[in-house]
Structure formats: C-alpha cells, structure tokens
Amino acid sequence: MAKPKVIGVLTGGGDCPGLNAVIRAVSKTAINVYKMKVVGYLDGFDGLIENRWIPLDYDTVSGILTQGGTVLGTSNKANPFNHPVKRGGKTVYKDMSDRAIQNLRKVGASVLVCIGGDGTMRIADELADKGMPVVGVPKTIDNDLPGTDVTFGFDSAVCTAAEAIDKLHSTAQSHHRVMVVETMGRYAGWLALYSGLAGGGDVILIPEIPYSLDAICKTVLKRSRSGRRFSIVVVAEGAKPAGGDLTVKQVIDDSPDPIRLGGVGNLLGQQIEERTGIETRVTVLGHLQRGGTPTPYDRILASRYGEGAARLAAEGMSGLMVNMRGNDIGSIPIKEVAGSCRNVPPNSPIVRTARALGLCFGDEVKTKNQILAGTF
Ligand code: F6P
Image (cartoon, rainbow, N blue to C red; front, top):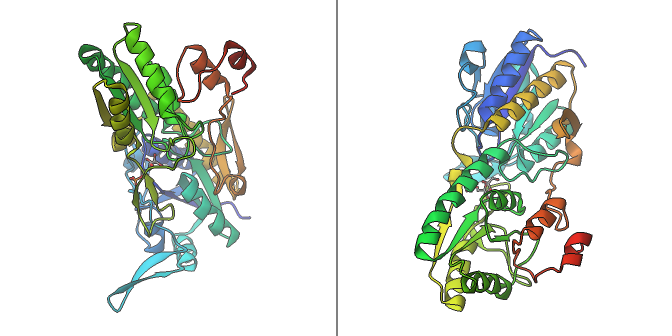
C-alpha cells in the first residue's frame, strides 16, 4: 500500500473528555513527523457521507488539548451503511458507504482515523472490509471496549463521578439519609465500580453482579444501627435485580445502539426508602460525566493514542485499533474488538479489594474465605 499523504479523522459516538487531545496528537504527529496533511470530518460519519470537513492544520489544533467535547462534532446515529434520506416526504435508509469511500479519496486521504467506541469500531470494521483503510482509537467513558486495558475518557468520568459522591457524602451525613447515585456505563460496571470505590460508597451495584433488594437494605440498616446513620449507594445504569430486567429509559430507533438505559436509581431509591424507612434521595449524574476538561491521565493517554494512530496511518497500516497493554501503546485488529463488550469480571482483584473493605455489591455477604479465594 502506498504511503498516505493525507489522513482523514473523525470522532464517532457519544463525546467524552480527551477527544480533542487525540485530534491534536494525530494532527501534530502527522504534520511534524510525517509531513502529512490532516482533514477532520464534521459530525462523525455524517461529515464523511456528506463531504463536510475542515483542514486540521497546526493552528487549528493548537490550544485544544484541555477542551472537553470535540471540535469536529460527533453523532451516535450516523452510519454510512444506514443513512437517512428524505424521499417524497418520507425518511428512507440507504447504504451510502460507497459515497463515503469516494469522499475520502476525493480529499486525497488514503486512511481514516476513527476515534470512537464499539459502534464506531463496528462501522470502521465494515468500511475496512469494503477496502477503505482505517485506524481506530478507543474512546468511551464506559471503558467497555475489549482489546485494551483502558479507553480514554474513562478516568475523567471517574473523577467527575467520584467528586459528586464526595459532595453527596456530607449532605447524606447531615440528614442521616441514604443517597443513591446513578452513573452511566451502559452494560458494564467500570464507571460505578471505580467512582464508587474512589468516593467511598457503601453499596456498589453493577450489571455484572445482579442485586437483591434484601441484601442492599440489610447493609443500609446494619450501618444505621451501628451508628453510621447514612449510606451511599452507587448504582450503574445497567444494574439489574437478580432474575429481573434492565431499566430502559428510551429506545432510539435510528441509532445503531438504540437502547438508552436509565432510571434504575429512582426505582431503587423508592424501594430502599419503603423497605428501610430511611429517607432516601436520588442523584442521576447523567451527561455531566461526559463533560469538562480531561484529567491529566486522559490528556496523556489520548496524546499517546493519537501519536500511535498517526504512526500506524503513516506506515500504511489498516484495520488496526491502537491499544494500551500495561504501560505500552500497541495495536489490535479492529475485527477482534468490533461488536463486543468488556465487562467487569465479578471475581476481579478490584472487586475483591472492594469486598475486603466491606463494600456491598447487593449480593449475599461473602465470607472471609470466599473473599480470599475469589469465589464470588
Ligand atoms: O457510551 C457513553 C454513554 O454516555 C453511556 O454511558 C450512556 O448509556 C449513553 O452513552 C448515553 O447516550 P446518549 O448521549 O445518547 O444519551
């Protein structure tokens, strides 16, 4: 494959802190090291389909390292294989992938860097199968992409959620209340687990460990009787009761990932108050977790991912996603990543740590031997 002279870049899916840091790193590396040009497509794959792009020169990307969101705009609906088109007053969905590939060629780009989560990687993989060279960069506050130890955006979201839990602690204590905090995270519990542990939560409920209301209320009442008259319950939006269902907030039909979770916090808050008689309040952190400036950790991770992606693109590689293993930046075939979810292993060392500290996961209390053996 001929060495590329132009790199295309886009951000896909939900935004998160660190996207601009990746855009900046891809562009600066391409310009400084490989003497290449970079174009940025606007609003995710929509910009590629509609040929809307801006040049990403040195001046454009200077000063964006610390900015939240994405200067390119993004979309969690855009999909070149299923693009809405108006026909006689009706919306029909068309495969525009050939148009997308032509548009990339039109600007002289021979590779597209796709910064996104599993939906974006799925589309990137399909485009690669059609012969369009792509390089992926793993983004999401959910940290649920397989093939990498960590996605950028996760650390920033954990910081936001942990800070909120810290603040809820003092008011919970003053009023002797139960505070339920609902985090995002989709079908994985990483965000609830890390922010709950960092924020000193008392109960952490994650999708990977179905909960029992009895176990939660037992913990809350035990704390209350022993003089700790408040409790913090951190619940992932994807948590569900044993034998029960996910709480779905909305179904967005034209999104590649139509289910929007949410509402389990309110449900639980009501149940806990009814069952324990302790006044309970609910805070849903929502999109706050996706906003704001990236943490220093995410700025560095995003910069490393961006440099790695530009290197792969300059070397004419395709079908790879940059990843992090230990402290090393490497890459993995996008095909191995696309369409799957990385969950919290219920017996992982971090769950063991939390259990050893007395945290309740909403399941039956584990014995010391179970905790030591990791049999939960
Ligand atoms: O994947 C990131 C994420 O913020 C999830 O944690 C959440 O479930 C979803 O996106 C929310 O999507 P939307 O922005 O469409 O409400």
